[in-house]
Image (cartoon, rainbow, N blue to C red; front, side, top):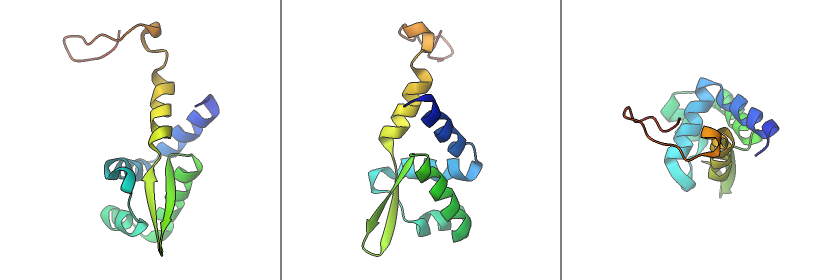
Length: 107
């Protein structure tokens, strides 16, 4: 993942609703969820949810998969791991992280 993709992903996640949707989809696993389930769980009308799903999709953080008449959205775990990797690749100057007494895993 490059800097431009990272900024786009972080920008998409920098909204409370989109972060909630993304976390729900991560928890749901590869099966994903339908927009109806997401909307019901978040108690959100369909139009704003559709906007947030579009933003997350354009950032590459989620993928849409048609199944019959329904669409299932799921987290793009590859993109998620690349984002975390990009953010932590220079952690501790390339040295292995050590866990301190408080449980923090870095220098």
